[in-house]
Length: 128
Image 1 (cartoon, rainbow, N blue to C red):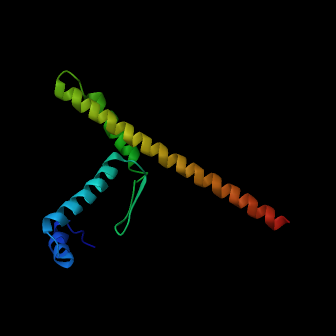
Image 2 (cartoon, helix red, strand yellow):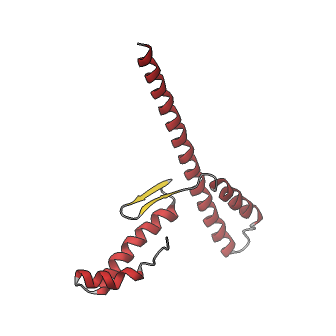
Image 3 (cartoon, one colour):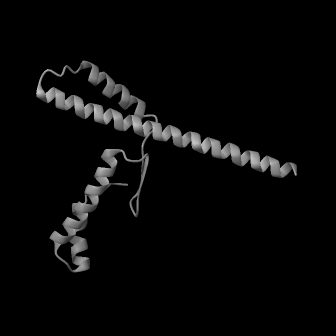
């Protein structure tokens, strides 16, 4: 499956809907801007987008990111304004990744607890 750039949809959609391509471009840009914002902000471990699919954070890759950002923060010496800004950005990213990792871990524990409760109920019903 080859992903298509959003610009490939503008002209055919404008012709199909019989409207201005600029209007279609604005609508597509608004939609993808919102999608990008949700992905970059790491607001959830699973982002579902209708008619496009779902995007899941990879649990195995998050610790690598935490290590990478931590190592980068240790090396950074905030002596100049640019490095202070970079340090703040890295700290914000590290916090987002840590929150996402915690969210995924909590969700896993919740699922495990749910399955244990479900199995206990099932075993109890079978005994009766």
